[in-house]
Image (cartoon, rainbow, N blue to C red; front, side):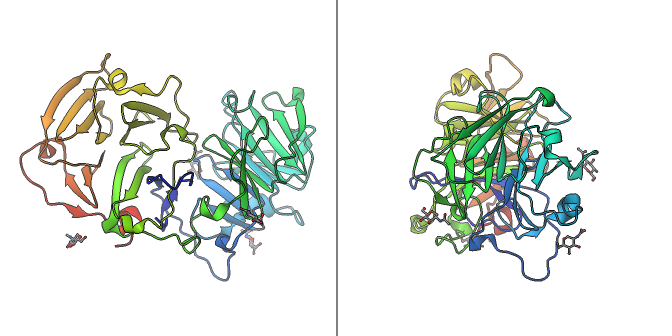
Length: 430
Ligand SMILES: *[C@@H]1O[C@H](CO)[C@@H](O)[C@H](O)[C@H]1NC(C)=O
Ligand SMILES: *[C@@H]1O[C@H](CO)[C@@H](O)[C@H](O)[C@H]1NC(C)=O
Ligand SMILES: *[C@@H]1O[C@H](CO)[C@@H](O)[C@H](O)[C@H]1NC(C)=O
Ligand SMILES: *[C@@H]1O[C@H](CO)[C@@H](O)[C@H](O)[C@H]1NC(C)=O
């Protein structure tokens, strides 16, 4: 897949055997118009800074430009963060990170930018009162002219920390009590000098040149064949590495859901072996389900993923962390057994509809223990994925889908005509 228009991709190549891709569909589109030559990140750019915004979109900075997400053209960074060039003569963004500080809602999810000796704090694309400040006013002992910075929440680091990078040093800074902070300075000889660092789905990536190296945030260890070229992973470069958009008729949706915020997540592969030249991707960070998923549904702001007889529940916030105690078995979590083809919950309902072969099983998500309350045969078989939204229920089978207004029409004996998946739905070639 090449991500065009309004697609966000959350995928990372880990193994050539994997066939699933994960896409996040964002309903809003960018409306900027550009004139003149903009830098093209597919040419191989060394970014100045990378950070996630409060919605979980990755922001890539280079000079006065910004890329929002993993596809799309550059824009001027002052269009989104207009005060960043208010101070005359100040340079580009040296480092940026998104604060993770659950204990302090005034700080949590704010984005900090470091330019020369100044720090800017933004929330909802607005500069906070009192900023910019001198870096040391907010982060005592942290040097000016940083290379990179990244948040490191407790659980991934020993305590909630921010890692600052300058030269060969990594410094961690305990947040919260800014006047009683401590800082450790470490040297990580295995890590190249990082010009930007990104935490993406619980993994840590040091960017250098147009390459990146994944490292452990506590030890700095690098495991695996790094560096890798960022253009294969963190941006969609159509003509890079021979990557090709598959034809819509080859697409197979493995699992799909949309959350309360209107983001659609889908896992897709292709049915055609002739597209085997395609890069294969796996889900970065959702390391527990790197072999793809059978079904996914959203409920109360969480993503439920089903693979074989296991259920994984992820927090649906920007971090997508696995909820403690998971995975659990299908029997434990939903009171069913056997292969699940698809599953969906309709908006503001508390029933998950699980498709197993030619049956649809309704499970009350409020009842404990969970039991099947209804078991209805379906006209359709071989369903790959299903979702329910305000416009009804869609059942995906190969490169086609069936649209039903509601559960009544879905379970009626009236046959529906399938419709073809289109490029505007999934970014494939029509
Ligand atoms: C944004 O930056 C560009 C180029 O640096 C400049 O021409 C433009 O006037 C700036 N816009 C604003 C709103 O500051
Ligand atoms: C974000 O800012 C926009 C306008 O700039 C405002 O309409 C919206 O309510 C703000 N959202 C939050 C969560 O503060
Ligand atoms: C990027 O990594 C490749 C190895 O994967 C290496 O050959 C190349 O020199 C690196 N380029 C830069 C600019 O770091
Ligand atoms: C769906 O696609 C197939 C080819 O894949 C084509 O033959 C058929 O006419 C299409 N149907 C519609 C309704 O466009």
